[in-house]
Image 1 (cartoon, rainbow, N blue to C red):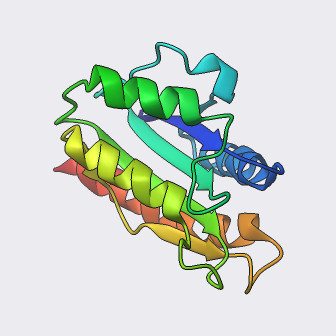
Image 2 (tube, rainbow, N blue to C red):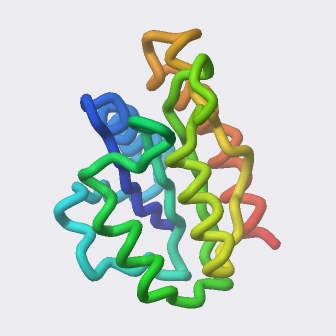
Length: 154
């Protein structure tokens, strides 16, 4: 069985709500899913034999939310080489801003720099188009679970 570690960065709670819904969706699909609160991430380096799913909103001018900034900078500073880590990424933002999903873009760049491989599409949820980002995330999840199964079979 695969294990998914879920991390989120949020400003007003939407990304946390999305991550909680994804955790339930993964559990319902028979996949072990651990949801980390941002204050639990100090010293956390995602195990390469498990999957990572990042859900992050964007604040200000494409900035990473304050709650997850310490972990982002810790990962950047430690720069662990993670060539066998597979990760998924969901960004919450507003496309009326030039920095749409800018925080998630920074996570994408960081984890690719660390050697990790993105599994599936980078889902960008536009607050200008939906008031329920968890609905879009849950619609994205079955394809991601299918990719997990294909990775396991390969």
